[in-house]
Length: 206
Image 1 (cartoon, rainbow, N blue to C red):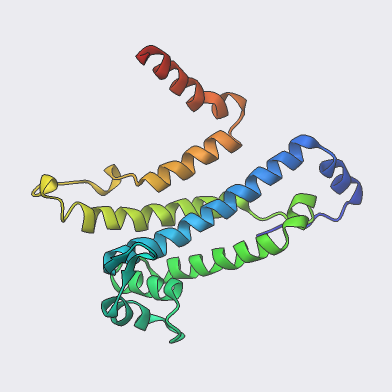
Image 2: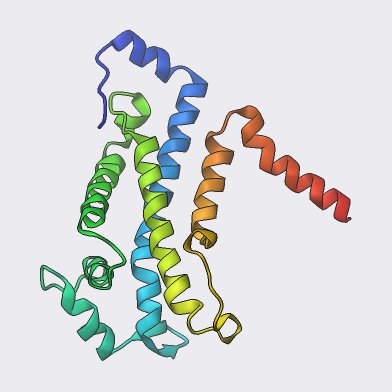
């Protein structure tokens, strides 16, 4: 839940504090990026799975199978790719009813977040960023992990007959979100930890 501040002195004090404003801007940007990655996780693998033609102008395109197997599932019967993809993921036991509700809530919050960005920066509207970001990471991880385990590895002869534990599969998009959060929001030492380690390894290699 978001909290509203009513103390004008505190609002101005925070608004004139560079560290506070920078933190809010970073959190705002990170949340919007994370939500776009969630939308991508919901739609793009499924679109690629059903893609059956390619052109230089449009890239990969879907045909009748995508329309009949995915777009037809739109609960509003408008063939919306986002709603249809969520319905397909539910039908195939990738997502639960509760997770669908969570996605809907996060999308509503994202829309409010974008429209009220001025209030977010000003401090009169404070979304529960940490909770929502964790929810998004969990959803992206679950969706992407399902595609890796049930499509990519299942169709890769190098992995035939091998047992892979679910927890051992970490999608790249999940790692990217976690790295961005650590670098952008971590305390000083923590935020620089990955950079320093990367620089150390690069220096030793060269």
